Length: 232
Length: 238
Image (cartoon, rainbow over the protein chains, first blue to last red):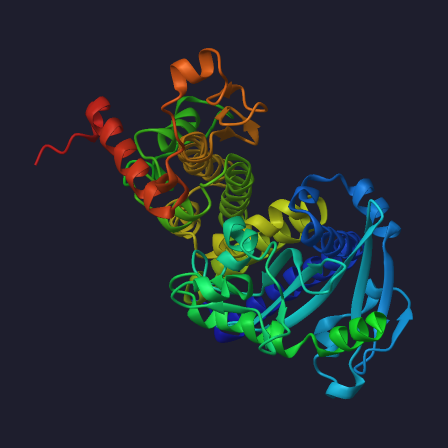
């Protein structure tokens, strides 16, 4: 048996050595990590426009992304041109509602504009977020992407992984002007009467799907305020 | 497991780099003592990551790396290590190596990092790694421990890739992203092609079950069955 003093010293030395090596590695690789994350975010926004963009090479992503017009919206929906990808939704969420900034990307698809908005909300275990591409009528959805921190694989995580789930949104309307309601991810399946404004929920992932409904309803007001001002 | 856990005193003074014993240490876990099909360790990650070949390959490389170097480091530390904190020290070493893998992957292969997500972190809890540390590295010299880690990592990785290949080919019609069989012209065998493709393979459809984790369990079960009926050493006499 070793003495307690030896045990303490041994563990202390071991953990210090390990900590120093890891800290060094983490700091030296940080620029690469940040570059990868920024690129991933750009690609994610582009795949909301067209799922095929997921196969793009890094340079093509940068090129397409740079070609988009970027705006930063305030809570009232006033837009200023600026680097929207620098807006961190995670940080914005912690601010008071009237101080929040919202990113908006406008993609030129052969003369027609596509508006990509960002939403963020709560899933079952942690945060979920997504990008929604809208056509020029500001109602019809051209495509969506979702992501999450830690939804259950195979259930809640399907909002990100299941392309059939995401395909359902395409062609639907995000907002029903007649009934004043937002698009709903509906448990039990969409109804025929409302099929343009409803999407089938994923079985076993009710809370995550309700989270998607809520983030569309709760996080899009500034965008619609801006779109309405464009329509006038 | 007992046959690889050789006590130190049994080993001759002069050890060759790749003697008979050393070769056995590496090849044993590939077949007779395979971590997945015989020791039945590391099943959780084997079910979860094997939908596609490429992430499985990365996972296999990561486990080989962690297993080999954890064995090496623990074997080097084994005489100075206070026995009271043995397990904690092993865990620190494993966690350290896994974090290194995670940081490196995140920097150089971000898409795979995203695909594997939590499973990289879960290598820490992969029973193969700690199992080999306890059963082998604590009682053997560094070089042999390193080989044992290498062998077990490869044994695990080999099964992972076999399972992933079967699941990807039959579940998605692709192999490591190459399109093999499907209903559009960019596949090697186009089942919708009016010519021979339609005639010979018109009936073919991807098996949706293969994409789900349950299929991995069936595939591993069948692999165990095949291996046991083909390898006489694994036949249970009792």
